[in-house]
Length: 114
Image (cartoon, rainbow, N blue to C red):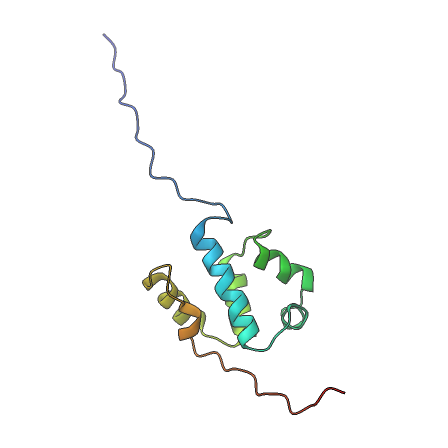
């Protein structure tokens, strides 16, 4: 009889879906951080040399972010990306990592609408 190799076990699969619960939670936190910083999608896009549509697409899950883009977004919004990731990954999914990253809230506007 000849040698028959043993079948290899597949490693556990990692979800690459942008709609996986962790990816959705990350997008939700990034959006909240942007809003807490008082930035519109257009304003953030301008800071990043991208369009409003680019920001919309990653916030809506139509586009995945790579790590470099995440760092650029964090810096443009004004929070520490490392602190955010550490807090995000250490917390259960039901807690809000974004609230712990000390993004300054915008000052209330002194303008009055007429």
